[in-house]
Image (cartoon, rainbow, N blue to C red; front, top):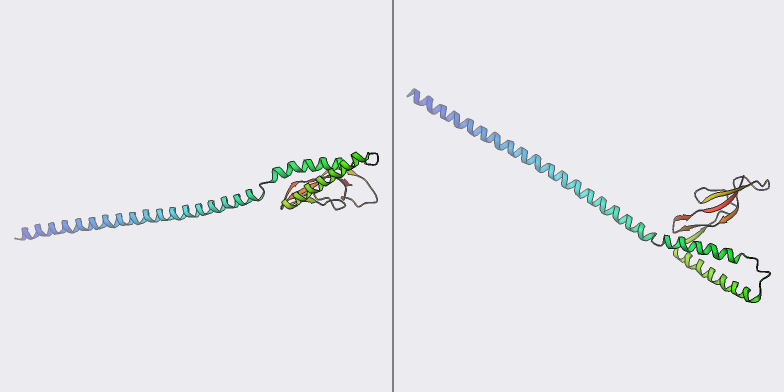
Length: 177
């Protein structure tokens, strides 16, 4: 009987060990699953944040793109404005009445074109007589005039323009040195 009790006791011990192993295994699996779940949650949160950043960035890019959508057209028109200004600044003292009337019409078209550009948000950069600022002008020539202060724009050779709040063409100027 003692042998039988020992045998039952050993079987009970084996059952207890199996139960403990199973419990340990189940706790291990549960811990692994909780860890995997936490990793997936973290990934999900990061992906959501990345997507929100992407969405914000693309919205900002769209706003900028639409804000300056006419920039290339404005740049091309500015070249035409330069041609108009050269033609208008011709000496008209020796012109016939017919040519003089043509020049008046030319000036009207020029004025309308400037008005349209102004309505679009194009402004001329005012640098004449002011201290040279490389952010708004390019010094093409220098001059030495003792009567004027140093580093001041003496003459604007080609006008500069700002489209909305962006410099699209710097002024080309002569600076006193």
